[in-house]
Length: 528
Image 1 (cartoon, rainbow, N blue to C red):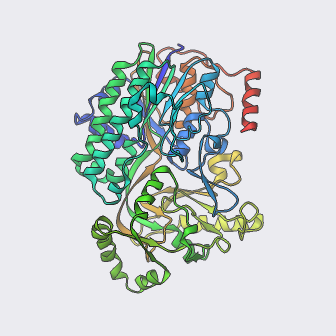
Image 2 (image 1 turned 60 degrees about the horizontal axis):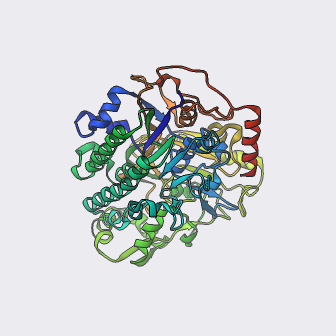
């Protein structure tokens, strides 16, 4: 086969929204691919997070093997994290293997692709995880393609914070148009065998408006999908004759309308102790989050401490109207940033989610791994973990619904390859969103709309070598070996993913790396 492969990512793409939009005529190019190519559910990683999932896409391995099990990775204590980069990915990525096969990879907006792992050989434009002010490599591309001088990574976050949704949508549309002006030039004018581009816009708008899109077909955010579809049409029209197209998402999306404050529950159960030093309570520090914090820092900060929330506990009728006033008036119009000044006392806390509001898992504060952790031996570790699992699996909200569907240990998720400092417990969510913040006096709060990630993403294939059929469910780890197989490149034997052979019209034997190539890969793993 030995064909070129184009991969287009729709971050957070879900068939629950995209298929109805295609049927309603809003996405005719997406509809064409649905009808003429292959389609199926693509299961994300656990947790279904952007950096974790795209690293699995890039390696064909589960997060336990490639090491990027979250946006933020623990250092020496649960107070200490660093944001992931390409340096944290253990082993070789598929684009490095493509390069070794004397073929040319181009990746644009791929999370955890910075700093470039193929210096002097690779065109890389990276995404929102980038920390510095450089994200285009080689930098000379901006001289070659002046359109790239308008390339931005994130929209203006002040518009989202102020809930100016129309302006926020306009901002995203403009940003994607500017990105695509450069992407199109590179696609048409640079040699490549593998080309990747990710639309982040679908994730951004779904976090802000998925509920309105699903329930009301809100007109303004729908423009994002018309724009994406227009560019899908452009890729179809401009693909080389020997290229096949894969469309995928890193995870799906859903709306939660009930919230459970997990860390507050841990405090109530005696597993967690709070402190008034909230600076130790980490939020995700993506570039987008930093832009958000920059906007908030321009406002006068007012701390809300334990005394305030104790007052709310005794006057629960005040919390709902106060929050409504804050979100509808204070947050939008006044130069005030209300900061919850409650954090975690890590020296006394046995279990917590230490990274802010976007809760996907829990850590046991094991003193043998984390400085100051109060858990000191295997017996205590196993007992605490067992207690948490039993308590939360049986926990029900005021409506009688289970808070979580299931709980998994790190061994159940990652097997024997579980990194020592990865989360200890993972939650399969039911109808409650689990929040790690202390911004409520209650454990349970109905009526809060949370548009968040879920496991089921999308996968489509289209092109001269692709069948026309519906597919069984596949894992995001299956994409890397499938790409290599389509390009006639031998696969590393340690990939967890399997080639999705059912998409191909013509079947051929799957090639695997020679013993010498495997040794080189092992050396790369050790060096990293």
